[in-house]
Structures are given as C-alpha cells and as structure tokens.
Length: 452
Image (tube, rainbow, N blue to C red; front, side, top):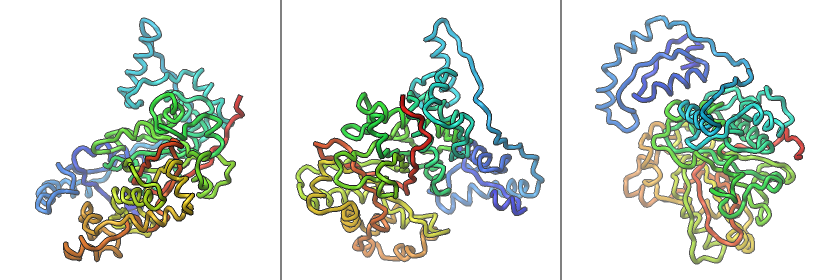
C-alpha cells in the first residue's frame, strides 16, 4: 500500500475484525499513518469462497467511498532522538511505590507479566557503564515497528530485566542482528499469527567471562541459567518497548508461546568436537557473537538406546520431519528464490562426541539428517492448500493423486545447508532439541567497556 501510495495510486485495506490496531500501528511504523480500511468479520485464510463473498460484498460501497474521497492530512512521524523522560511513583513505603510502578508499567504493556526492576536514573546510568557508546547513539531501527533503538533505550529495558552493565552490549548486538534480518522474514517472524519467538545463541570468550550457561538447563530457569534468563528477557522487553512488538497490536500471535519469555543459550564450545557456530558463519574463534534464530516451536529428541552416530542421527532426522517444509509452502516464493525455512538442532556433547568419533563432521551431520528427514508429499503440503501461491517449481505436487502424494517422499528442507547444528547442553547426558526456524542473523558483540 505504501509503495502504491507513493506512486500516486490511492489504496484501502480490507481488515478482518481484531486486526484494526495492528494495521494502524503497522502502517504508522512503516511510514503511512492514517491508513484507510474497511472491516469484515472473519480472517480469510480458512473460510470458503461463499463465505468470502458473503462478508466482502457488504463493504464494497465503503471501499469505493474510501478510494474516491480525499484522504485527510496524516500526522507527521518524528524520528527525533530524545532522552528518556522521568516518572515518579509514590506509596506508603518503598515497596508500595515499587508496586505502583509495576502496576502502571504492566497496565501500559511495557512489561512481560513478571515484576520489573525500576529503571531509576542511577540504575540506568550504571547500566550505561557497560558500553563505550554515548547514550543517544542510535544502535539500529528495531523491527517490527521501526523504533529508534538508542543505547539508552536498550539500557532501560536491560535494567528492567535484571541485567548487569556487562550484559548491555549483548542486547545491543542482538537488536542489530534482528534489524539486519531480511525485511519480509523479520516481519513475518515478529508479526505473524503463529507462535514464533527469538532465540539467542551466544558464542566466544564472553560466555565464560559472564558465566552464560552452556550446559545443563541452559534454557533455564534457575540459578544456573540466571544470566541466560535476564538476557533473553531483556531482548523481549527491548523488542516490545523499542520495536513496538506489543501483543494484539503488532504481535498478532493466535495462541502465544512460553518461548517468548526468555530463550538464550551459550554454545558448549569447551565440550564440542566441532567448530562453533560463529566460526562456521565466518567469525574468528576469539570473537564474541550473538546469533538470532526465529523459532517456531521445539521438540525433545529422546533416544534411549542408540550408541552409534548413524543410530543417533536417524532419531534426530525423524524428529526434524516435524515442523513442515517451508521451501514448498512459501508465499515468498512468488517474489524471489530466497531460501525459506530452516531447522535448528541442539546436540549435547554426549551425542556429539560419538558422532565425531565415527567420523561425522558438522557438514556430514547436516548431510545425513537432510538425507533421512523425509516425509510424504501429502503430509508436507496438507497445511498449505493454496497451490497458486506456492513456488512454481512445486505446484505440480498438488496435481498428483492422493495415492501418489502418499508414496512420494521429499526432504523437509530444501538443502542440507538449511540445518544449523549447535552443541548445547550437559556433557554427560544425551537428549537433543529440534526447532523449526528461519535463517539466522549473527552480529559481533562490540562496544564493550572494560570489565572492572
């Protein structure tokens, strides 16, 4: 709509009920405040053609009127960088004041439902000591709402999450990684009606310096993963309060997921037989990095008897079938050949060691999983029954008979490179974890103040 309006062509949207706030906030974030629209009762995805006509016909006159009536002047969007304002909360004692602060912030949806640490000027100033950058420096324009992410704004959210000053540069790098994601992919990941959530993988010396858990219970909760928890929480709060990722406004998740509360791990480089993720993605071993994966679920892989690499990898491969085949059912395929969909696999040292012992490099692991993670065509295409929007090279699958669709097996990812292997977890117990995901985005953690 924005591109058409720039070209002088009037536009109007048809919105399903419940998406009005989302459309208004999204249009404003993308540079078109004052979006015009008509509202219909139901979402179009899963209704019949007759229902589509029945709910669209009554708004046709509204659409014509909106298209033929001059638009009112739109508000001006300011991108001016300002310092945060100051608010005061009072009560009968400090605890009452703290409760009033929390209640107000949660009512504004500035929190995650858990108690927040008050971002007092002193605490924010202390947090800013973790970086060499100026508080008003712009780190990035943060999706999905293209918020101006200054160092200070990120620091405020780090304080509320319970971070320490040394954690601030990690969240700054994570914000940059999200901002660098492919535009359509990051909007789909953050604004979808599906239960997507960001997962951070930390690599390099910083994991040991700051005590980021890479072993047992690395995804938390508790004392062992305290740093992981506050880092994941800080990223979510930053996405909300700087990127405008508010539930029901720009985050339109249908059901939601607990994975949105906090997901941060460190790779267990010490016990891994393979090169770490950041080295695989082009960084030197001595660099400290954060990689963001857009996850769409997680599946525990419980192998209770295999001791060989092939046996273990077959179990992982069979579990990778879960999550579908994004390269076939791909709306983005209409526009380009950008790879769609990926699978993130966490393999603990207890499984990685026998794989390496049997001669499996990380590349060999990916090749093996890709060769064995195969499913019937009928299963892969069932959840996306819109053949005309599928990539042209896969449309023939929809023309096969049901029997042919059941007999024909296809890999669930387009290539072996769409698998990402990370050594994570306890060194003495073997349980793997599989996440349907999108393409990762990696950033080096820079602008760190000396640890003191």
